[in-house]
Image (cartoon, rainbow, N blue to C red):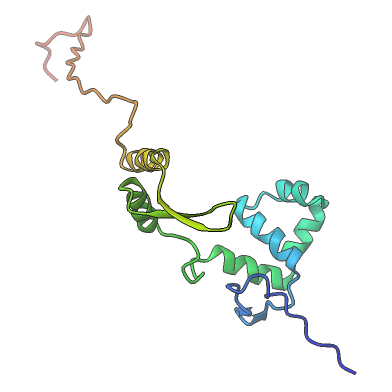
Length: 162
């Protein structure tokens, strides 16, 4: 009787089955979650240990497994098949919300779906974020002023020849 192979990628179908020759299907779901938080916290091991109620040495040990290192490498690389929106995509989405070109689908208590435009406050927030990304709301005022500094040292004559 053989035991079936364990495949822990069911909950995260976008995760690769293998990366850099390492089979990631056997990486535990809890470890995936810990490693994702570790990357999101910019490798803050102490915060990760506190969040998951582990000892910090355990987090270091988990992160040092071969499968974990491969998974961290995949998470850190830009090779994630478009899972992270680019800056252009973010700005395009914010622009669509600001122009009120997008619609939200809401479900009423009776179960029917209602499609309505984005709220005005969401459009205003999108405009604010777009303005910040373009540097429109700069609080510092840059002033340019020409000043002339005259250095007069006493005891030196202009008539001295060198």
